[in-house]
Image 1 (cartoon, rainbow, N blue to C red):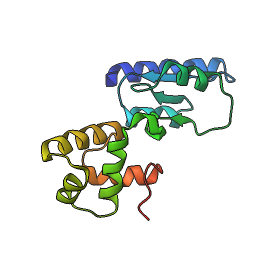
Image 2: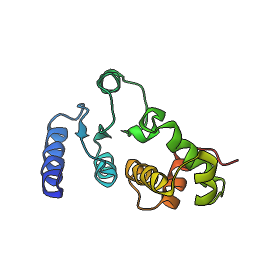
Image 3: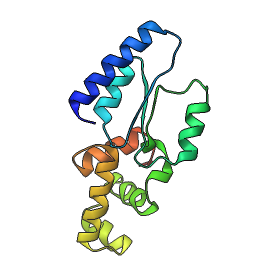
Length: 144
């Protein structure tokens, strides 16, 4: 969703919510647009990313009226990360070096770079250090 498209949809959503105050709106994006989702929430729209969301999860979320946080991002779902990716985050979060992680998990440095790229993309950050912090904040890893 481009910024122009997002602004159009956000303005449209505001008009709908003004006219129908009891309505619940959801923005469904096929990309990881964390900043746009956050802006949606700030404007009263329930939002989530669907890049790795299964249809069953989508339907369950839409049909569920629990009082959950207004933003559901599949970053919180352990299913969106491979076990190896969580292991990498866990080891790096505990302060281990890249060299240690490659040796411990039997990965080449090229393969590890691929996993780190996937992790940072899924979390919407630019470095593995930011990914570790975000994963910790989202309780995906525990560095104790």
